[in-house]
Image 1 (tube, rainbow, N blue to C red):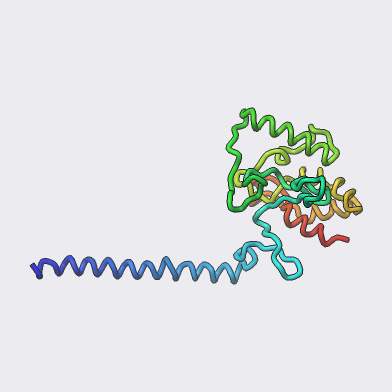
Image 2 (image 1 turned 60 degrees about the vertical axis):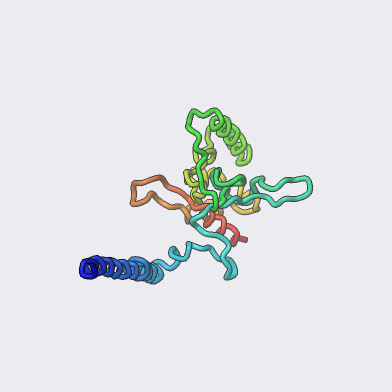
Length: 209
């Protein structure tokens, strides 16, 4: 009986050794190697693409956020601030852009709720930016799949230039130049569309006097 158990024990010990070896390789060695390469080659991206102000992180270029007026007496929080470029709508969380609740609206294109929301958003954006409703870009009235997308189309960024310049007392050419400096082309030349990272653009805008 004892002799019969020896092969079984050897097989179990062999399996245990393999488990330990691959745990070290895939559970420690590989992650440490990739982390080291990322920190050496892409430290900014590896650390979350953080945007700093006065040496302190204030945002991430990977996660969008709302730019709204603060709550005051007689005015509820959540209204868009005309001094900032506005992102696209977000379905992530009740107030939008909740990184703990990344999600899309899951409403189909013919859903009456989405149709109503798009009409309401188009009218609101047109009035806010002072443009005809027919010129409002699609991304200004529809949420992204993640609800956290920090990018808007170049068309939507250009539409907001006059409003931002007027609210800040800046020259339109100055604000338009900022948009051009932060414009991003299509991925690998043909995927997606030209866009602008709103978080990075607004951070740059905050430094303009």
